[in-house]
Length: 228
Ligand code: CA
Image 1 (cartoon, rainbow, N blue to C red):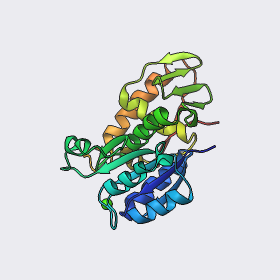
Image 2: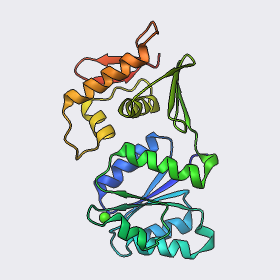
Image 3: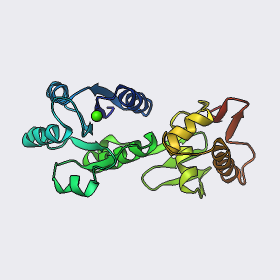
Image 4: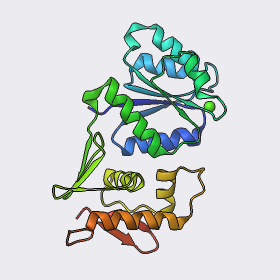
């Protein structure tokens, strides 16, 4: 069964972005636009994980968290709190909200997905599939190891994240801008060329000792992991 994630966020653009990416990653996702709606939706169908914004209309994220934690039945809902820069994570942690993790805005979708998996792994270990496969390439998220034809492929952290992004949707072409957003986040100043450099490194390491290219360059469109 797919893990069910409820996104509680009043910024429509961010909520939609998270919803889209979670569904792409194989989660069942839904959106609540304020704190009250969140509690109603939880009562209707209990999520495995809540992505909960701190600043919300009606009830704040903190209040939602406390309401949920007050009921024993909700003790196993994993909660990731989204906070704004300047909220000082130390201060928030000190409030003892009962959240399992905190992410400061702005963040990249990749970072959120990684933290979400880490929290789910802790709270609902059976829900998480850690291995992604495309042809002869296997990526293990738990050990952060990649193999091709059973041989280990030593990747740097950025190349690992790139491959993780590609292998979630084998064959799909990602533009440089999409890769930039996914790997570095929308607010970080990264040049387009940086994407090419890291895809180049990923390709070189993946292809070492292998006869054919695992990555496809699509002229003026972007890059994809070969699925055929
Ligand atoms: Ca908000």
